[in-house]
Length: 257
Image 1 (cartoon, rainbow, N blue to C red):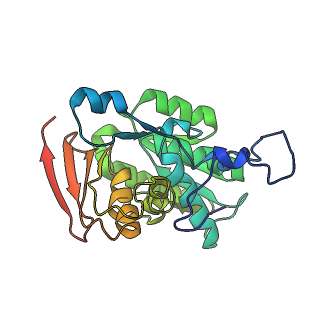
Image 2: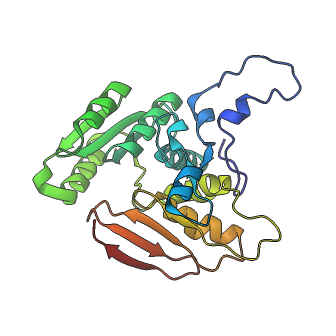
């Protein structure tokens, strides 16, 4: 189920190919089969209105099961831990600090695979995400917002001591998190065709999920691209940030707004 680098994940299109069996029924066997492919749409009216002499293409991640690009990371982190023999369904309790979307993806996949899932979230974060996490089956611990990030990590450490067979996926340092975008998200952008001498790719996105696509997937797949930019919004400062690191360096300039 993990796929291979450069192959992407077929998602919905995989259900529409019967492999010559003549089957009319297109039903996913489990929710993970729906994670992956999302459509691209060319924004021609915006390009025309703004006088942009280039193609502007949007990727509609709302086609993921939980309407978020984070579904890809959630699946990859769990699959990676399984492949390494670190977790087992029915035995391991998955614990993860989350602000919302990635936690929702994790609880969806974890419970579908037979894991117990415990989320840790600061009290000031979105109430609707707290409600949804519980509704989906997560056990949720809310930390005192005045304690900040140390309060979250302290709670995770406490749960590791109190609960049996705990594994923390640790989205902040887990290589499988950005690897999901390198393996799957970036490979779904058909940005390079033979004969094109060069191009400029600018990604506009929230946070840095797609920065990994720009820096790794585009850069690795396309030797002609020696540099590029991705613009995200810092989750800590709230400011827009251009980030450039396609040729091995990393540069970040904060912009107001």
